[in-house]
Length: 80
Image 1: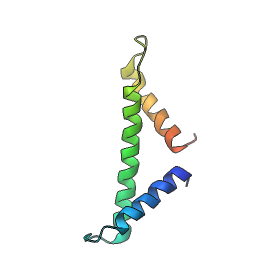
Image 2: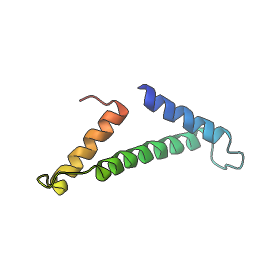
Image 3: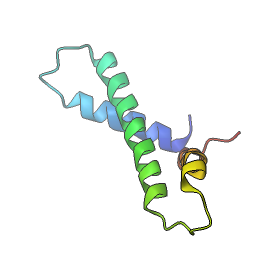
């Protein structure tokens, strides 16, 4: 597990350790929170791609998805 993903997992554990009113088992809550944190980071990556200025010569509709994928890979350190 790379360092960034490990940090997200530890953050999920910390958040759920403090959740005293939870009704689900701790492990289930951590997995759910971990997934939520990853999704939020992916959304943030896509939002940063959207907010970058794009030259008029670039078709953002066609390139937006691939740019978002590349941003997520770089953010999490995922290699091909």
